[in-house]
Image 1 (spheres, one colour):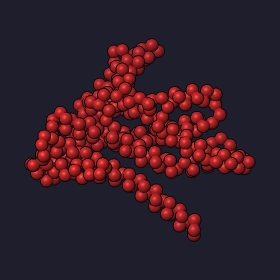
Image 2 (cartoon, rainbow, N blue to C red):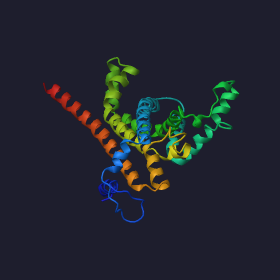
Image 3 (cartoon, rainbow, N blue to C red):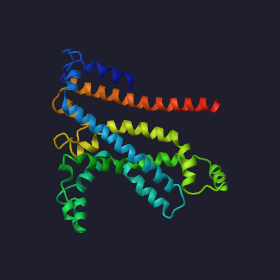
Image 4 (cartoon, helix red, strand yellow):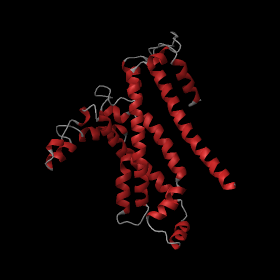
Length: 277
């Protein structure tokens, strides 16, 4: 009721020209989807979501695994470092957006202030005003906010590995990186898969951080599907087109998620048949 029905209704509303007031009556079929195909802002938003997905996963999963390995080891001040790395995830996206907006402020922000203090005045810039790099700076903020989540799930996965397996490997002469390469990484593959799926969904649902920091600007250079939907629905009151964007986003995420799970399942089946042979 609370998951499938809204999806069905969203698909239904996307077939109307509707301003969100009263029941939709102006049926236009797939015109909203035809409009989407010719909409350059839609393609820009989709491209930005894809960039966020690729960069976020390629940074957050390897970094999350590395930090989780460190934080499950024997280092001094372990509780302090865990607190430092995990604290951003308790902050709301709005707070994180405001914090990084202040950091990137060209006049009094921390980023430019630090560069001036160390004599690198030539590197100061209008961080969120550069349409060529603004998406990169937003991704930095997103990684800072979300890395704690990945650390938590990888710590839990690593701690679930029996210590006896490591001890047996150590008796065979394995040390340091060899232990993690041959034991840790293979045994946390299911968690890596879960993190990849959740990261995919998160990359396409990102909204609050971008809306607070840039509102999709400048010149739509940091626009993503969710911010574009919001503008269409609440600013331009084009709810029919907005719901067509929402349903398309759902369809894209579903395809990517099913593809990831399908590839993993095929690999398991192949490995199982090879092992039996």
